[in-house]
Amino acid sequence: MEPITIYKGRAAALDRKNVDTDQIIPKQFLKRIERSGFGEFLFYNWRFDENGKKRPDFELNQPHNQNTSILIAGENFGCGSSREHAPWSLKDYGFDIIIAPSYADIFKSNCMKNGMVPIALTQTEVNYLMERVSAPDYELTIDLPNQTLKDGQGFETSFEIHPYWKEMLVKGWDEISITLQYDKEISAYESQKKAVSSI
Image 1 (cartoon, rainbow, N blue to C red):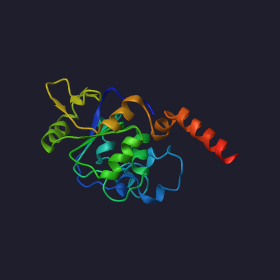
Image 2: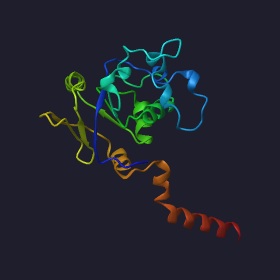
Image 3: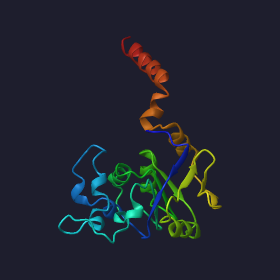
Image 4: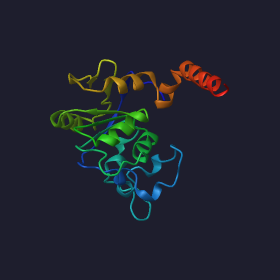
């Protein structure tokens, strides 16, 4: 995964509460087993009508929300089933950072496992950001090592993240990478087991 340290990007606002994983990626698109290719189906039933045409009133279809990499959403984002396809689709669409007042626990964990940073802020802070994201050239800066978020216009806040996940994201590790840190110990253990079994 790509390491995340100081991250700058434009944000899109999705002012909806209790967005569940079936709304993030509908079940009919879960037939793929690889992690790529899901971005085009993100929020499919909201983004497109029954004829496959974009709905102009949906937030992510509006001009000021194009080429954004930070998603600001309502409380309890990612609720519902535990499907890992939900963060896959968000990541493949281009989002690296999610900001919301709260998340479903499994969704939050799945985001971090896939190299995304889910940031929990207060409802007041989220409301502030949602009101400003449509302004031209409005950009957010996330400093993950120092756990701060600012907008360059005087707004700055801090956020919490578990040290384990912080290290993973800053170093660009996934869980396989963590295992490989113990490659020598694993090899030594396997050699010892082989020696014992050959006696």
